[in-house]
Length: 252
Image (cartoon, rainbow, N blue to C red):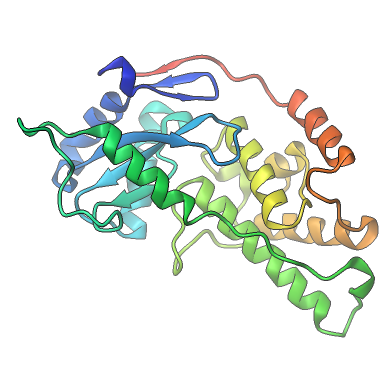
């Protein structure tokens, strides 16, 4: 299982980095893999596992790595992202005098790196400005779709600037659990000024494109909900209470 202090606690589930590393070592060992935990920026999962590699990996390899973990250990244990030492500004892992990797230092560097890459909040037109044919509505629709594609792709750990999930990807085909869906909900709200979909709509809402259309229609009819407002907090609390319970397991 590895050292207890390295254990990652994700939504009440205990994830042993050593178990994931052992799974990947036979086929991915040449990448110099380490698993570390970093805080979930939405505060939903607590911590999430991140895969760190000595060599930079491309989109296809990152997706393959996550797929192996999902298949053998479940979505909860799958890396939330892949970061190379090059992206962290390192040539090698920080080590002790006897050559042992200092995971706590790696985790701190990964945390700082991820904080710089958070989805930024965008300003969308006020609902009264949406009108067919003026170009503003079309631009806003594309903006919403782009954000949903990026957020869903980031959530399953395969997003980069050039490659991501196709807009017509069916959500039910993605390897996600209830914690992942809750994180998507909060990321959408953060990116779109408080506007988001319910957990049920996100988990069962057809394709990413269809979710974008639904979200777009909602902003036109009900306007924007200010993030942090009493109404928004009540709605968030109600949805959270309806979320499927997580099973406490060990990813070992």
